[in-house]
Length: 117
Image 1 (cartoon, helix red, strand yellow):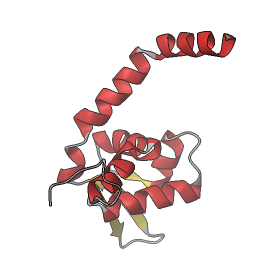
Image 2: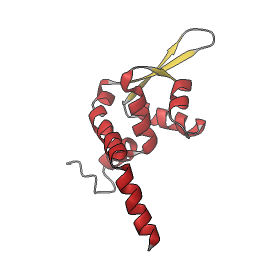
Image 3: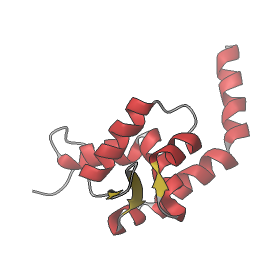
Image 4: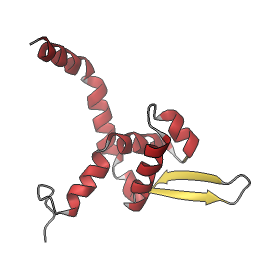
């Protein structure tokens, strides 16, 4: 069977849900320059709750996009990193980030025009 994200039963739609989620995009971007600890991710991704960060990291790990490494120390140290598969997303999510930042003023102007009606 060929992947078809327009079909609600196709697994590719779940993949799109994962990689298109705002928190996933921001976490992948945060991990672009190397491993990060949980607290570093929480500090960088402003507004994400502890529950949502944990849930998103688990989903990304399950999908093979992120690895979780527990180091035997006291207290335990846990690092998160992109896998080779996760690194293939970098150009895509960096493009989304660039588009959002480069076109922010235009989008805000469009919203203001729309809301004025």
